[in-house]
Length: 416
Image (cartoon, rainbow, N blue to C red; front, side, top):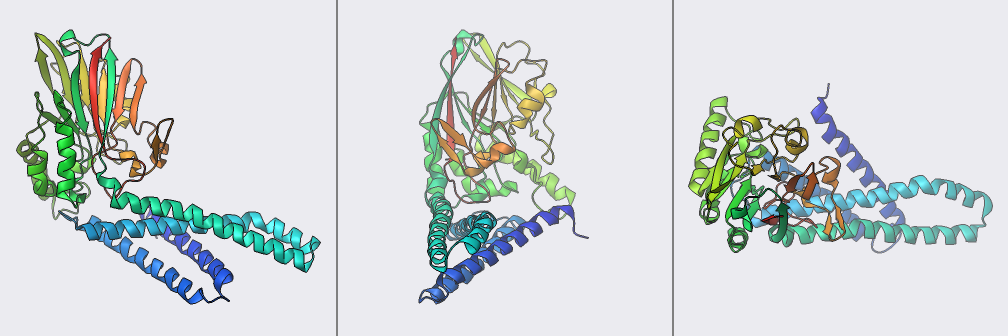
Protein backbone atom coordinates (compact mmCIF):
# COMPACT_ATOMS: atom_id res chain seq x y z
CA UNK A 1 0.00 0.00 0.00
CA UNK A 2 1.31 3.47 -0.92
CA UNK A 3 1.49 5.93 1.98
CA UNK A 4 -0.66 9.05 1.57
CA UNK A 5 2.33 11.42 1.57
CA UNK A 6 4.04 9.37 -1.14
CA UNK A 7 0.90 9.36 -3.30
CA UNK A 8 1.16 13.06 -4.19
CA UNK A 9 4.61 12.89 -5.85
CA UNK A 10 3.58 9.65 -7.57
CA UNK A 11 0.46 11.25 -9.05
CA UNK A 12 2.49 14.31 -10.07
CA UNK A 13 5.11 12.10 -11.76
CA UNK A 14 2.43 10.23 -13.70
CA UNK A 15 0.78 13.48 -14.82
CA UNK A 16 4.14 14.91 -15.81
CA UNK A 17 5.02 11.83 -17.85
CA UNK A 18 1.55 11.80 -19.40
CA UNK A 19 1.91 15.41 -20.53
CA UNK A 20 5.31 14.62 -22.01
CA UNK A 21 3.81 11.75 -24.01
CA UNK A 22 1.35 14.31 -25.37
CA UNK A 23 4.19 16.74 -26.13
CA UNK A 24 6.22 14.09 -27.95
CA UNK A 25 3.17 13.12 -30.00
CA UNK A 26 2.52 16.74 -30.97
CA UNK A 27 6.15 17.44 -31.85
CA UNK A 28 6.32 14.35 -34.02
CA UNK A 29 3.15 15.39 -35.79
CA UNK A 30 4.47 18.92 -36.37
CA UNK A 31 8.10 18.14 -37.27
CA UNK A 32 8.24 14.39 -37.91
CA UNK A 33 8.42 14.77 -41.69
CA UNK A 34 10.78 17.76 -41.66
CA UNK A 35 14.53 18.26 -41.43
CA UNK A 36 14.29 19.61 -37.86
CA UNK A 37 12.79 16.45 -36.36
CA UNK A 38 16.09 14.89 -35.29
CA UNK A 39 17.15 18.10 -33.55
CA UNK A 40 13.70 18.54 -31.95
CA UNK A 41 13.64 14.94 -30.73
CA UNK A 42 17.12 15.33 -29.19
CA UNK A 43 16.05 18.49 -27.33
CA UNK A 44 12.96 16.71 -26.03
CA UNK A 45 14.91 13.79 -24.55
CA UNK A 46 17.63 16.09 -23.19
CA UNK A 47 15.01 18.15 -21.36
CA UNK A 48 13.66 15.02 -19.67
CA UNK A 49 17.18 13.99 -18.62
CA UNK A 50 17.89 17.46 -17.22
CA UNK A 51 14.65 17.50 -15.22
CA UNK A 52 15.31 14.01 -13.84
CA UNK A 53 18.80 14.89 -12.60
CA UNK A 54 17.59 18.25 -11.26
CA UNK A 55 14.89 16.54 -9.19
CA UNK A 56 17.41 13.96 -7.91
CA UNK A 57 19.84 16.72 -6.91
CA UNK A 58 17.12 18.67 -5.12
CA UNK A 59 15.99 15.55 -3.23
CA UNK A 60 19.57 14.79 -2.21
CA UNK A 61 19.99 18.36 -1.00
CA UNK A 62 16.94 18.09 1.25
CA UNK A 63 18.17 14.76 2.61
CA UNK A 64 21.73 16.01 3.14
CA UNK A 65 21.47 19.81 3.32
CA UNK A 66 24.45 21.78 2.08
CA UNK A 67 26.10 24.53 4.07
CA UNK A 68 27.18 26.74 1.17
CA UNK A 69 25.90 25.47 -2.22
CA UNK A 70 27.82 26.41 -5.34
CA UNK A 71 26.28 28.93 -7.74
CA UNK A 72 26.41 26.30 -10.50
CA UNK A 73 24.51 23.76 -8.38
CA UNK A 74 21.82 26.31 -7.52
CA UNK A 75 21.56 27.44 -11.13
CA UNK A 76 21.22 23.86 -12.39
CA UNK A 77 18.40 23.12 -9.94
CA UNK A 78 16.67 26.37 -10.90
CA UNK A 79 17.11 25.71 -14.61
CA UNK A 80 15.68 22.20 -14.45
CA UNK A 81 12.75 23.36 -12.33
CA UNK A 82 12.06 26.14 -14.85
CA UNK A 83 12.27 23.59 -17.66
CA UNK A 84 9.80 21.31 -15.90
CA UNK A 85 7.30 24.14 -15.38
CA UNK A 86 7.66 25.09 -19.05
CA UNK A 87 7.01 21.51 -20.15
CA UNK A 88 3.96 21.21 -17.92
CA UNK A 89 2.45 24.43 -19.28
CA UNK A 90 3.23 23.37 -22.85
CA UNK A 91 1.52 20.03 -22.24
CA UNK A 92 -1.51 21.64 -20.60
CA UNK A 93 -2.09 23.78 -23.70
CA UNK A 94 -1.93 20.66 -25.86
CA UNK A 95 -4.28 18.78 -23.56
CA UNK A 96 -6.72 21.69 -23.56
CA UNK A 97 -6.58 21.76 -27.36
CA UNK A 98 -7.32 18.05 -27.51
CA UNK A 99 -10.31 18.33 -25.20
CA UNK A 100 -12.00 21.38 -26.69
CA UNK A 101 -10.91 20.63 -30.25
CA UNK A 102 -12.62 17.25 -30.50
CA UNK A 103 -16.12 18.62 -31.31
CA UNK A 104 -14.64 20.93 -33.97
CA UNK A 105 -12.75 18.03 -35.54
CA UNK A 106 -15.95 16.00 -35.74
CA UNK A 107 -17.78 18.97 -37.31
CA UNK A 108 -15.00 19.48 -39.85
CA UNK A 109 -14.93 15.78 -40.71
CA UNK A 110 -18.66 15.75 -41.45
CA UNK A 111 -19.20 19.13 -43.11
CA UNK A 112 -16.02 20.28 -44.85
CA UNK A 113 -14.22 19.33 -48.04
CA UNK A 114 -10.69 17.85 -47.95
CA UNK A 115 -9.18 21.20 -48.93
CA UNK A 116 -11.12 23.06 -46.23
CA UNK A 117 -10.12 20.41 -43.66
CA UNK A 118 -6.46 20.80 -44.58
CA UNK A 119 -6.58 24.59 -44.33
CA UNK A 120 -8.43 24.45 -41.02
CA UNK A 121 -5.97 21.93 -39.58
CA UNK A 122 -2.96 24.00 -40.71
CA UNK A 123 -4.41 27.14 -39.11
CA UNK A 124 -5.25 25.31 -35.91
CA UNK A 125 -1.78 23.75 -35.76
CA UNK A 126 -0.08 27.13 -36.12
CA UNK A 127 -2.32 28.62 -33.46
CA UNK A 128 -1.56 25.80 -31.00
CA UNK A 129 2.17 25.99 -31.76
CA UNK A 130 2.25 29.72 -31.13
CA UNK A 131 0.05 29.60 -28.02
CA UNK A 132 1.90 26.71 -26.38
CA UNK A 133 5.28 28.30 -27.08
CA UNK A 134 4.22 31.61 -25.53
CA UNK A 135 2.47 30.03 -22.53
CA UNK A 136 5.50 27.85 -21.78
CA UNK A 137 8.24 30.22 -22.92
CA UNK A 138 7.39 33.36 -20.97
CA UNK A 139 7.36 31.67 -17.52
CA UNK A 140 10.51 29.71 -18.45
CA UNK A 141 12.43 32.84 -19.42
CA UNK A 142 11.09 34.70 -16.36
CA UNK A 143 12.31 31.92 -14.08
CA UNK A 144 15.73 31.88 -15.73
CA UNK A 145 15.92 35.62 -15.05
CA UNK A 146 14.77 34.97 -11.47
CA UNK A 147 17.52 32.47 -10.70
CA UNK A 148 20.16 34.61 -12.38
CA UNK A 149 19.26 38.09 -11.13
CA UNK A 150 16.13 38.00 -8.97
CA UNK A 151 17.21 36.16 -5.83
CA UNK A 152 19.50 38.96 -4.60
CA UNK A 153 17.49 41.87 -5.99
CA UNK A 154 16.70 43.32 -2.55
CA UNK A 155 13.86 45.84 -2.44
CA UNK A 156 13.34 48.38 0.34
CA UNK A 157 9.66 48.95 1.12
CA UNK A 158 8.84 51.93 3.32
CA UNK A 159 5.57 51.92 5.24
CA UNK A 160 4.18 54.71 7.42
CA UNK A 161 1.85 53.46 10.16
CA UNK A 162 -0.25 55.81 12.27
CA UNK A 163 -1.60 54.91 15.71
CA UNK A 164 -3.58 57.30 17.94
CA UNK A 165 -2.19 55.75 21.14
CA UNK A 166 1.48 55.65 20.12
CA UNK A 167 3.51 57.34 22.89
CA UNK A 168 4.63 60.78 21.78
CA UNK A 169 8.30 59.96 22.36
CA UNK A 170 8.06 57.26 19.67
CA UNK A 171 6.59 59.49 16.98
CA UNK A 172 8.88 58.85 13.98
CA UNK A 173 10.38 55.67 15.45
CA UNK A 174 11.80 53.51 12.62
CA UNK A 175 11.84 49.71 12.55
CA UNK A 176 13.59 47.69 9.82
CA UNK A 177 12.36 44.13 9.34
CA UNK A 178 13.93 41.20 7.53
CA UNK A 179 12.61 37.65 7.57
CA UNK A 180 13.32 34.18 6.19
CA UNK A 181 17.07 34.41 5.68
CA UNK A 182 17.46 30.69 4.89
CA UNK A 183 21.24 30.95 5.01
CA UNK A 184 21.74 27.36 3.80
CA UNK A 185 20.54 28.41 0.33
CA UNK A 186 22.91 31.34 -0.28
CA UNK A 187 25.65 30.95 -2.90
CA UNK A 188 27.03 34.51 -3.03
CA UNK A 189 28.35 36.08 0.15
CA UNK A 190 29.00 39.49 -1.40
CA UNK A 191 25.42 39.72 -2.67
CA UNK A 192 24.09 38.91 0.82
CA UNK A 193 26.41 41.52 2.34
CA UNK A 194 24.95 44.07 -0.09
CA UNK A 195 21.50 43.35 1.35
CA UNK A 196 22.75 43.70 4.93
CA UNK A 197 24.30 47.07 4.09
CA UNK A 198 20.97 48.17 2.60
CA UNK A 199 19.31 47.39 5.93
CA UNK A 200 21.89 49.43 7.83
CA UNK A 201 21.50 52.30 5.36
CA UNK A 202 17.91 52.76 6.59
CA UNK A 203 19.27 54.05 9.93
CA UNK A 204 16.45 52.32 11.79
CA UNK A 205 16.02 52.71 15.54
CA UNK A 206 15.39 48.96 15.80
CA UNK A 207 16.00 45.99 13.51
CA UNK A 208 13.84 42.87 13.82
CA UNK A 209 14.24 39.44 12.28
CA UNK A 210 11.13 37.26 12.15
CA UNK A 211 12.44 33.74 11.75
CA UNK A 212 13.87 31.02 9.49
CA UNK A 213 17.54 31.75 9.96
CA UNK A 214 18.43 28.40 8.35
CA UNK A 215 16.88 25.61 6.26
CA UNK A 216 17.58 22.60 8.45
CA UNK A 217 20.53 22.94 10.84
CA UNK A 218 22.00 25.76 12.88
CA UNK A 219 25.47 25.29 11.35
CA UNK A 220 24.19 26.69 8.03
CA UNK A 221 24.53 30.23 9.40
CA UNK A 222 28.24 29.80 10.26
CA UNK A 223 29.60 31.06 6.88
CA UNK A 224 27.45 34.18 7.28
CA UNK A 225 28.04 35.03 10.94
CA UNK A 226 30.41 37.82 9.94
CA UNK A 227 27.82 39.16 7.48
CA UNK A 228 24.64 39.32 9.56
CA UNK A 229 26.52 40.37 12.71
CA UNK A 230 27.04 43.68 10.89
CA UNK A 231 23.36 44.57 11.37
CA UNK A 232 23.30 47.54 13.73
CA UNK A 233 20.60 49.78 15.18
CA UNK A 234 20.32 52.12 18.18
CA UNK A 235 18.07 49.69 20.05
CA UNK A 236 19.73 46.57 18.65
CA UNK A 237 18.42 43.58 16.71
CA UNK A 238 15.60 41.43 18.09
CA UNK A 239 14.65 38.09 16.60
CA UNK A 240 12.32 35.11 16.72
CA UNK A 241 12.48 31.58 15.32
CA UNK A 242 10.58 30.19 12.34
CA UNK A 243 9.49 26.67 11.49
CA UNK A 244 12.84 25.87 9.82
CA UNK A 245 14.77 26.79 12.96
CA UNK A 246 13.68 23.74 14.98
CA UNK A 247 15.55 21.07 13.03
CA UNK A 248 12.34 19.35 11.98
CA UNK A 249 13.43 19.02 8.33
CA UNK A 250 16.61 17.09 9.04
CA UNK A 251 17.03 13.37 9.68
CA UNK A 252 18.87 13.47 13.02
CA UNK A 253 20.65 10.31 14.24
CA UNK A 254 18.82 10.67 17.58
CA UNK A 255 16.63 13.06 19.55
CA UNK A 256 19.56 14.36 21.59
CA UNK A 257 21.30 15.58 18.44
CA UNK A 258 18.28 17.70 17.58
CA UNK A 259 18.15 19.07 21.16
CA UNK A 260 21.85 19.96 20.94
CA UNK A 261 21.20 21.77 17.67
CA UNK A 262 18.51 23.87 19.34
CA UNK A 263 21.02 24.94 22.00
CA UNK A 264 23.40 25.77 19.19
CA UNK A 265 20.66 27.80 17.46
CA UNK A 266 20.28 29.93 20.59
CA UNK A 267 24.06 30.44 20.65
CA UNK A 268 24.16 31.44 16.99
CA UNK A 269 21.63 34.21 17.57
CA UNK A 270 23.84 35.49 20.39
CA UNK A 271 26.94 35.37 18.17
CA UNK A 272 25.07 37.43 15.59
CA UNK A 273 24.16 39.98 18.24
CA UNK A 274 20.47 39.09 17.91
CA UNK A 275 18.30 39.23 21.02
CA UNK A 276 16.26 36.05 20.51
CA UNK A 277 12.76 36.28 22.01
CA UNK A 278 11.45 32.80 22.85
CA UNK A 279 7.98 33.70 24.14
CA UNK A 280 9.53 36.74 25.79
CA UNK A 281 9.34 40.50 25.61
CA UNK A 282 11.52 43.57 25.85
CA UNK A 283 10.66 47.15 26.73
CA UNK A 284 12.08 50.11 24.85
CA UNK A 285 12.01 53.41 26.75
CA UNK A 286 12.37 56.95 25.42
CA UNK A 287 11.90 60.12 27.41
CA UNK A 288 10.10 58.21 30.14
CA UNK A 289 7.65 56.53 27.74
CA UNK A 290 7.61 52.85 26.77
CA UNK A 291 6.63 50.39 24.06
CA UNK A 292 6.69 46.58 24.16
CA UNK A 293 8.47 44.34 21.68
CA UNK A 294 7.05 40.83 22.11
CA UNK A 295 8.41 37.74 20.39
CA UNK A 296 6.82 34.30 20.21
CA UNK A 297 8.28 31.02 19.07
CA UNK A 298 6.83 29.61 15.87
CA UNK A 299 3.06 29.18 15.79
CA UNK A 300 1.69 27.79 12.54
CA UNK A 301 -1.15 25.68 11.28
CA UNK A 302 -0.52 21.92 11.07
CA UNK A 303 2.03 20.52 10.22
CA UNK A 304 4.15 23.45 11.38
CA UNK A 305 5.36 23.72 14.99
CA UNK A 306 2.96 25.36 17.46
CA UNK A 307 5.26 26.30 20.31
CA UNK A 308 4.42 29.98 20.35
CA UNK A 309 2.79 31.07 23.62
CA UNK A 310 1.40 34.58 23.36
CA UNK A 311 0.14 34.66 26.95
CA UNK A 312 3.58 33.80 28.27
CA UNK A 313 5.25 36.26 25.93
CA UNK A 314 3.01 39.10 27.14
CA UNK A 315 3.71 38.59 30.83
CA UNK A 316 4.90 41.82 32.44
CA UNK A 317 3.97 44.10 29.53
CA UNK A 318 0.94 45.74 31.16
CA UNK A 319 2.71 49.01 31.97
CA UNK A 320 3.44 49.99 28.36
CA UNK A 321 0.52 51.25 26.22
CA UNK A 322 1.82 50.07 22.84
CA UNK A 323 2.75 46.55 21.73
CA UNK A 324 4.55 45.16 18.69
CA UNK A 325 4.56 41.39 18.15
CA UNK A 326 7.15 39.38 16.23
CA UNK A 327 5.55 36.13 15.03
CA UNK A 328 6.96 34.20 12.08
CA UNK A 329 3.78 32.70 10.64
CA UNK A 330 0.93 35.09 9.63
CA UNK A 331 -1.61 32.35 10.42
CA UNK A 332 -0.99 33.18 14.08
CA UNK A 333 -2.58 36.60 13.57
CA UNK A 334 -5.91 35.21 12.38
CA UNK A 335 -6.01 32.22 14.72
CA UNK A 336 -4.82 33.81 17.97
CA UNK A 337 -3.74 37.45 17.89
CA UNK A 338 -6.84 39.16 16.46
CA UNK A 339 -9.15 37.79 19.15
CA UNK A 340 -6.71 37.90 22.05
CA UNK A 341 -7.76 39.78 25.18
CA UNK A 342 -4.71 42.03 24.80
CA UNK A 343 -4.66 44.54 21.97
CA UNK A 344 -1.63 43.97 19.74
CA UNK A 345 -1.10 47.11 17.69
CA UNK A 346 1.32 45.72 15.10
CA UNK A 347 2.32 42.15 14.22
CA UNK A 348 5.34 41.53 11.99
CA UNK A 349 5.53 38.17 10.19
CA UNK A 350 7.13 36.41 7.23
CA UNK A 351 7.06 32.71 6.32
CA UNK A 352 5.29 32.79 2.93
CA UNK A 353 8.13 34.29 0.78
CA UNK A 354 5.28 35.31 -1.53
CA UNK A 355 6.11 31.81 -2.85
CA UNK A 356 9.05 33.56 -4.60
CA UNK A 357 6.80 33.70 -7.67
CA UNK A 358 3.98 35.99 -8.69
CA UNK A 359 3.00 39.48 -9.74
CA UNK A 360 3.70 42.33 -7.34
CA UNK A 361 3.16 45.70 -8.99
CA UNK A 362 1.05 48.74 -8.05
CA UNK A 363 -2.59 47.78 -8.45
CA UNK A 364 -1.94 44.05 -8.89
CA UNK A 365 -0.64 41.59 -6.31
CA UNK A 366 -0.97 37.86 -6.98
CA UNK A 367 0.84 34.66 -6.08
CA UNK A 368 -0.25 31.02 -5.89
CA UNK A 369 0.57 31.12 -2.17
CA UNK A 370 -2.49 33.30 -1.52
CA UNK A 371 -4.72 30.25 -1.90
CA UNK A 372 -3.12 28.80 1.24
CA UNK A 373 -2.29 32.02 3.09
CA UNK A 374 -4.88 34.81 2.66
CA UNK A 375 -2.40 37.16 4.42
CA UNK A 376 0.66 36.50 2.32
CA UNK A 377 2.45 39.77 1.59
CA UNK A 378 2.26 43.37 2.68
CA UNK A 379 -0.04 45.22 5.08
CA UNK A 380 -3.37 44.01 6.48
CA UNK A 381 -5.67 45.85 8.89
CA UNK A 382 -8.52 44.54 10.97
CA UNK A 383 -10.06 45.43 14.37
CA UNK A 384 -7.73 48.43 14.65
CA UNK A 385 -4.77 46.07 14.46
CA UNK A 386 -2.10 45.78 11.78
CA UNK A 387 -0.29 42.79 10.33
CA UNK A 388 2.64 43.11 7.97
CA UNK A 389 3.91 40.04 6.09
CA UNK A 390 7.48 40.43 4.85
CA UNK A 391 8.27 38.74 1.52
CA UNK A 392 11.51 37.28 2.85
CA UNK A 393 15.20 38.06 2.54
CA UNK A 394 16.39 34.68 1.22
CA UNK A 395 15.04 31.75 -0.75
CA UNK A 396 14.56 28.00 -0.41
CA UNK A 397 13.73 25.18 -2.82
CA UNK A 398 13.58 27.14 -6.07
CA UNK A 399 16.85 29.16 -6.00
CA UNK A 400 15.39 32.32 -7.45
CA UNK A 401 12.62 34.89 -7.34
CA UNK A 402 10.20 35.80 -10.10
CA UNK A 403 8.06 38.90 -9.57
CA UNK A 404 8.26 38.67 -5.77
CA UNK A 405 11.60 40.20 -4.86
CA UNK A 406 13.47 39.78 -1.54
CA UNK A 407 12.32 42.46 0.88
CA UNK A 408 13.63 44.85 3.49
CA UNK A 409 10.65 46.44 5.25
CA UNK A 410 11.04 49.81 6.96
CA UNK A 411 8.25 51.07 9.20
CA UNK A 412 7.92 54.61 10.48
CA UNK A 413 5.57 54.78 13.43
CA UNK A 414 3.59 57.98 13.72
CA UNK A 415 1.15 59.24 16.28
CA UNK A 416 -2.13 60.20 14.70
